[in-house]
Length: 290
Ligand code: PAF
Image (cartoon, rainbow, N blue to C red; front, side, top):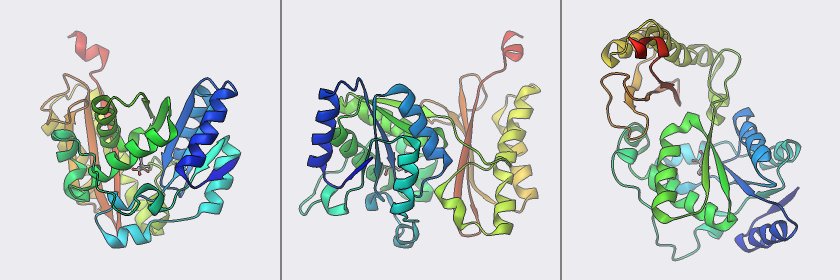
């Protein structure tokens, strides 16, 4: 596995891979601190593509708090070893000056509810500008046929899909299922910052999503009622959520019942760590038929 730091080196390697007959080029964009969630994206990319690139870049433009950016775990040697073992062909790990050289003056901004709801409040309005800007740069640099993202960041997937459609970037955006620990907590690079007690408390987040799914399976389709199922579980665990939201899974506009696929999304701070999780709700067949 190669590690490259410049866009021109990356382009050379991709050109060579295409010349060697690699049918499809896959990109797994990451900020490092790899866990099983990232590795599942590599496995999906390996399955679909002949050549797999992983980018590792802690993107300063998507952080609104300096402390969050500084505290973000950085472990390149461990990450590249994991990437190699998972079957990545090349890691692209640029410095900030490679992606944002002096004079850099372009922002990719997706307008509308996709960037104004859910995470917009907690992470700040610039967050999705930073994501759209860096992802467009990475997709163009890699010339990727497909790029792989985790469904845990469901809003990010929608923003990136909108961005590639609007800019005509010829990359398929593939959303892969959330990977969870055995107790249900969604894998996240931030989980390492949870203390033992916080870790136990955080499990209430997937439990709240499960309570919503269970109530829906029993025929409860009103989002107000489902909302109180989730908040009951969170409150019992001592968690005050930033939001428990029920939104149309394609537009992120508020949903009042589960007629169309609805995303139930939760954000909550546990200790000093902000966690997000979600589940996609669709009407069970038996309810739909009645
Ligand atoms: O999901 C992430 O890790 C980041 O938002 C991404 C997509 C790598 C862009 O910096």
